[in-house]
Length: 245
Image (cartoon, rainbow, N blue to C red; front, side, top):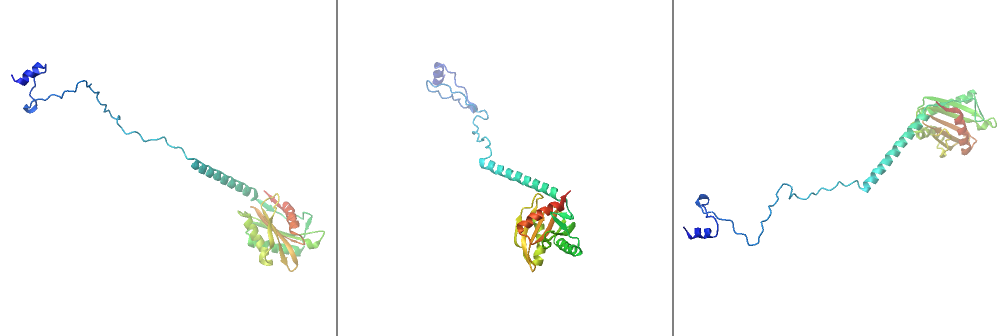
């Protein structure tokens, strides 16, 4: 028996057996005195995963909310504007114009000369504005024959009443020269657009006024009257000659 075997027996250790491939087995190194056995390391999945970088989704920024709110307001305003325009067109498009024998204190002149003058103006208006139906008349003032009113108008669907009225007034401008001081005036309860100005001719100044809405357009001449008086008289004439179905 070798000395190494005797020493291991004396120390109470089992004899060393042969190791793999005939080599002597080696024992684990002795732990220093007082060391405690360390607990096993937990290597289960997920224990050492990298910390999550996910964060709660941020809500919309205040600026974005303001922009979206502004777009919503503009969209609603646009829709309201379209709705209002559509209602106005529907209300005005079915207009009817008549020439009663009496209107606003004036009397219709049915003489051949007056009828020919009214027809001439009516045909000229129809050449500038495409109309479905047109009328024309001369109304005499019983207090002064020099203040007769010449009226011509027609009915049609006008998407842009202002342009229709401008086309009607061009009839006077093309024949008598530019209308001076042309300006918008109150159109009255029937709404739409109304303008008045002054045309100068060899016979003197004549006030020219006209109105247009989505269903009608008309032109009138007022010799011997001011712009304000003519505008007021045209509102009265319009109320008598225009109706809506």
